[in-house]
Length: 60
Image (cartoon, rainbow, N blue to C red; front, side, top):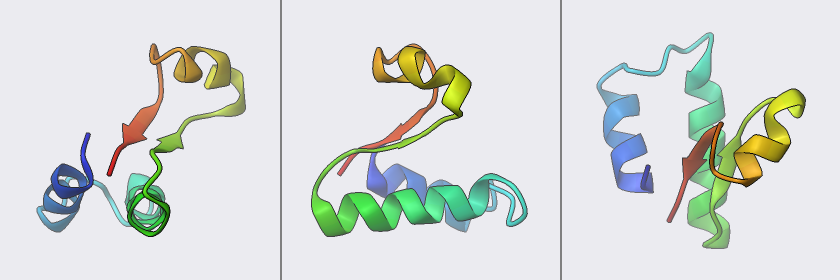
């Protein structure tokens, strides 16, 4: 998803504060400040996420 989409969905409450909310906020901050994509995943899913088959990508 794009930063704009993530911000909108975060504002609408789609990412819970005790769950994905903080992760999405951090990914938004990272993508905005660096201009690079951010990836939210688990260690076990890293290979699949890097191959764009798993995880959550937030792109500038």
